[in-house]
Length: 130
Image: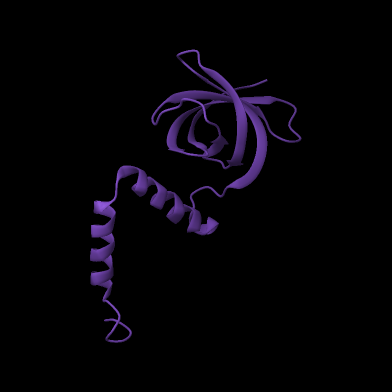
């Protein structure tokens, strides 16, 4: 039941939102998703993110290699500032050093999100520390 008679019901709100989302283009949907994800409190995330500025070498099986910067990192993945030619579901290897760490980390991952600022990479498997 709405709080007052002029407010739409929960069902009406959900219905309107779903119709609006369905009418959006794929880029608009991705932009909206990013905004909603950014507004979610860190407590609701599976892995809290830490802002960072860490140089990272990104390489793929096709021999493409870039050096870019990790903008945030969590136990589950990273967001990398890049304009490299990556695509969703692409498998990549990341090599970087964490502050105060003696060894480099090399970890495989998958590109799960692309936007105008860079790529979101979900970690798959720790390959080596050297």
